[in-house]
Image 1: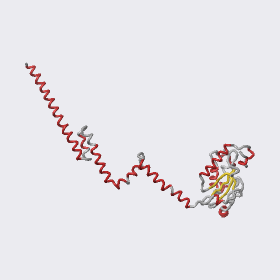
Image 2: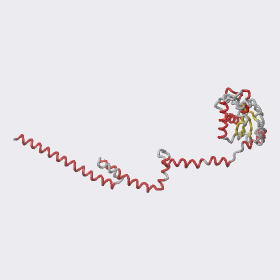
Image 3: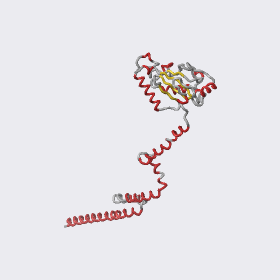
Image 4: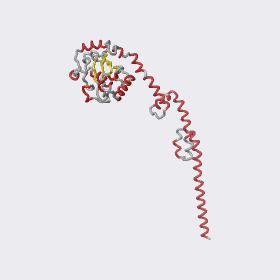
Amino acid sequence: MPAALNKNNSGHGRLPLAAVKRIMQEARELSNDPSTDYHAAPLEDDIFEWHCTLRGSPGTEFEGGLYHFRIVLPAEYPFRPPSIMMLTPSGRFELNTKICISFTNYHEELWQPAWGVRTAIVGLQGFFPLKGQVAAGVGSVESPASERRRLALLSRDWVCPHCKVPNKEILPDPTPESAKPTSNAPVPEEPPALEAPKDTSAPCSAGIPTALKPAEPQGGSNEKAPLHDREPPRSPIPNPPVSARPGGSTPPASPNTATEYLSPPVQRSSHKPPLLLDVAIMALLVLVFVIICRRMV
């Protein structure tokens, strides 16, 4: 691996493959998932040095400003923290001076290997508007708010000597036209995606009633009539021969059909028991009469 890929750590010999893989991975992630608040990329001739452009926090004296800075990664990255140096005049940090923040090389005991370049950028953005003793530290500057606003306006046209591109071209302002389709585009796309499974998938309990509710008021009278006509012939046919007494629960659903099916079995069941009883009684009487006659003889 050429030594030009790590000019700032040339004294460490060969570059560790773990650091190179981690840096390339973070570079791909930032390229595939860009942000409107910052832009970061490693140099072509030294992947251990990144140039970043950060947007000023809204609602502060840095609003509207674009600030260019360097992030230098050590050879032991990500097990050791990076160092940050501001390049654009901001009235908040000294130029070309390593800034003392909890996630920089000044506090290696607080650094975690899970953090990365994105963590450093977001942390620096939150450190910008701090004031008082919390904002004091190595590389910090206390300038009047008016001076910071003036520098914020000038920072947009500031050009990095290495990148040779103005900050406003590296990180252009987001337009409302580009923001509207991103927020409104998924809104119309989500409902059809949710309605399609509601009509086709039965296990979704929430989707079934929503799909049926609009259909009932439109054709409720036409759909309910055939349902009632189909139910009566199914229920009384198997039930009457089994039990005649519970027939009283079926007449309200269809009185005409229920009486037709229930009346024949009720009459048959009512006539059959008396005939059997009469035959049995007659047989017993005949036997008793025969026994009595034999005893008398």
